[in-house]
Image 1 (cartoon, helix red, strand yellow):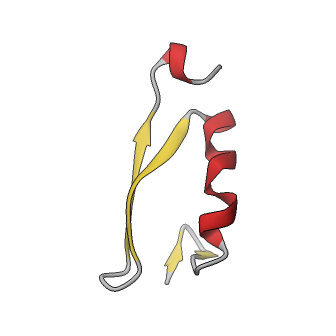
Image 2 (image 1 turned 60 degrees about the vertical axis):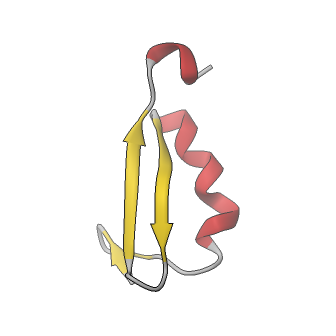
Length: 47
């Protein structure tokens, strides 16, 4: 599976916490359905 040209596999689970610094987190990830839902954090959640 690829999102924005980046392969998403089980190793992604280890690095998804890094999205917080960009203002997002993974809302739902389905390897079976090959979908990822990203949710934008509120200003107070980024810190």
